[in-house]
Amino acid sequence: MIQSPWEKLTPATVKYCENNLHAWVRQPANTWSNLGYVLVGLWLYAQFKVQSPSLWMGIIPITAIAVGITSGLYHASYSFVFQVADLASMYLFSSFLVTFNLKRLVSMPDSVSYLLYFGLFLASFVAFMLIRKRSGFLIFAAQVLVAMALEVAAWFGSETASRLNYVVAIALLAVSLVFWIVDYKGRFFDPDDHVLQGHAVWHLLSAICLLFIYRYYLQFG
Image 1 (tube, rainbow, N blue to C red):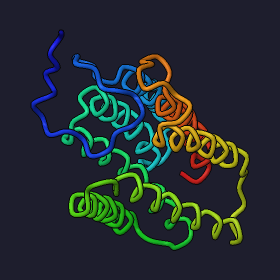
Image 2: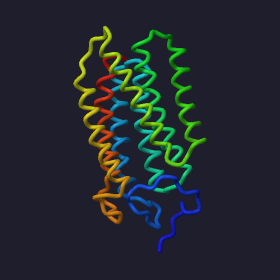
Image 3: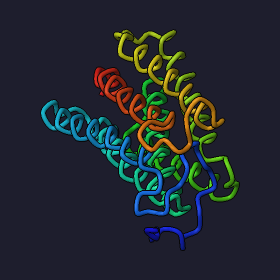
Image 4: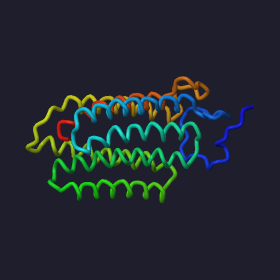
């Protein structure tokens, strides 16, 4: 039997459907599916370099790549240290959504908005480290809901913009969330299937979602 080098590390606090192997890659399906984030992030970064929008838009491709790498390591190792790294990458993205939408509603200098961004990120990270258990994704989801509420407020303001990309992104996110929930509940997917898992589908669909999020926010950035 191949011994996993990760098994000496403190295990993660959240277990999805796929069973762990005694190998270098403990959850193959949930690991390799993170390549979706990396590929999307690289593509968006290339677009960012060509389009030269504000630095804010560069956060999306960079965090997409970071999520792909840290989430891949999280599922490969099933360790707490990489679970924390994965959540930190996710909080970088959700904090961006809240801050950028608030910037659209309230005029503020970049210095203030950057402080707000890093403040939200640190608050999310510290909250998880204090609560732990299963709070990681709930904190992320709460920030996304706040960002969506701010988005709706912007829609009812004087701002005019094309909403199609945002609607497509939310639709993709909703579908991917169904797969996340089904997988988390341990339904419909075989835990010993290391090719297709609901959480892997979540990775791929939410990665595609980032393409439309970037296109939507590009008109403001």
